[in-house]
Length: 318
Image (tube, rainbow, N blue to C red; front, side, top):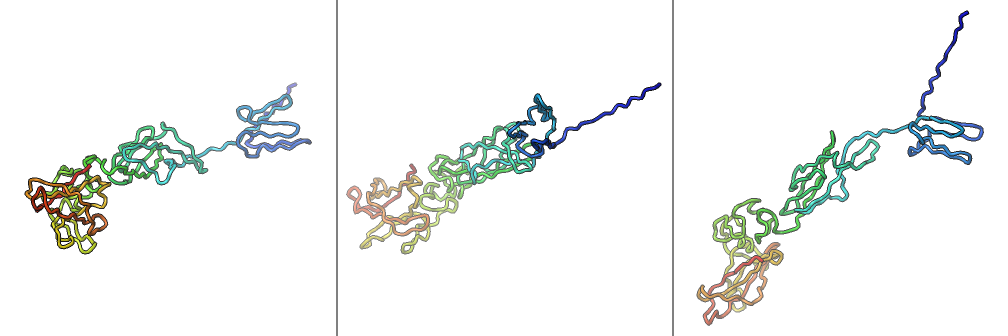
C-alpha cells in the first residue's frame, strides 16, 4: 500500500516592524527611535539590536524582528562659512572646508580626499589639496572666488582679500609711493611707475606729482590755485605776496595724508641758487579740498647775509 506523505514549508520573513503582546505587556517595535530599538518595563528589558539583523536572544525567548533603516541621499556640497563675509588677509592663508548636504538638510564634513579645490578668480595664489588658500598681495580690498568639486557636485565661495599695507603690492612694493595711487594713475605694471619715474616727461618725478597732488600722465598743469579757503587745483609751488604787509610767501600744495604717506616737505631758501637754508617756520594752511592743503611759509630776510630770492620744496619719502 502506498503511503503519501505531505510535507509543508513555512517561510518566515523578517519584518521591518513587529508588535508583540501578552497578558503582561504590549511591545511595539515599530516605534522609530535612534536605532537602538531598546525597550523595557518592570519585568524585562529587550534590545533588538544586540546582533546583526536585530536578532536578540535570552534563555526564555528568541527574537528576530528585522529592522528598519533610513538611507540619506546626497544632494550637494557646500563650502563652510564660519564667518560672513569670508575674508583673507593679503599674502596670508585661510583653511577652507566643505560639507556634504543630504536630502533631510543634514550635513557632514567631507575629508580632504573627497575634495578637489581650485582658485577660480581674483588675487588667490592657489588652494592646495588640503583646502589651504593663499592670497596674493593687493593694493585695495579685492574679491576672489574659491571652488570645490566632489564627484558630480561643486560649490563656489566669494572671498574678500583684505589690503593690509599701503606699499606692498608687487611690482610697486616698498618704493615709497602708495600702491593705490600708482595703480590708479599708472596701471598695475608700468616700468616707470616708481618714485623717480617721469612718465609724462614734464620734469617732475612721480613722487613730486603725488606729493603736490598732480596727475603723473598729464604733463605740467601750472601752479597751485585757490580762492579764499578753497583749493581750486593742485599744481607746482609758487611765490605769493600773501603775508601781512605784502611779504613774500613760499606757497605749495601738501597732501592731507602726508604723515600716513611718510612724506616730509622741507622748504629751503637761497640767495644764489648755490647755498640753501631750510626754513624752521611752521607752514600755515591757506586753503584745502578733500585731498590737499595749500600751505605757505614766509620768506626770510636774508640767507647767509644776502637777501633771500629763491625757494624750493624738497621731498623725502621715509
